[in-house]
Amino acid sequence: MVLLERISKGLAMEGNLPSQRKFKEMQEELEYKQVQMENAATTQGRLQQELELRKSELEKISTLEEKIKVELAQLQVYTSGHRVVPSSHANCARGSKGPLCSSVSRPSRPLARPACVGSVHPTLSDDPMDIRGTCL
Image (cartoon, rainbow, N blue to C red; front, side, top):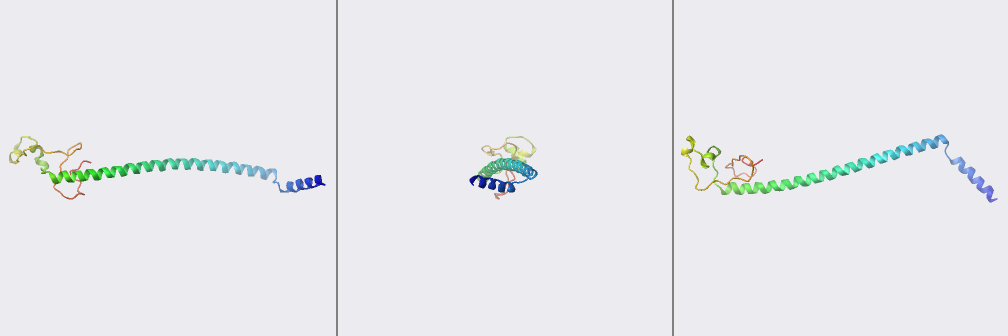
């Protein structure tokens, strides 16, 4: 009797099994979905790397922004604490001789220069947003 039940169950299960053609289609679909999942994982990994890169760039920009604020504050202190020589007379103040220099009074001490590379001509503006005369 047990043997007959097993055979009966086996035949019933056989009716539930897909045909060979359907089984092959299911295998192909499974392979396709596995490839799609691997591609999605690769894309997710690349996007994660790009996110980390963008976060580090944002951190650098934030740090740079803070440095610029500090330098602007220092420049404001510099320009408010020193007598500013107009740019056309700056060379005269440094000891240059010439026809325009005869009318310029020379300071008793040399003019301090901002700590930057290049030629900088400070302005008389008290506006902290005025960047003329700053190092860029």
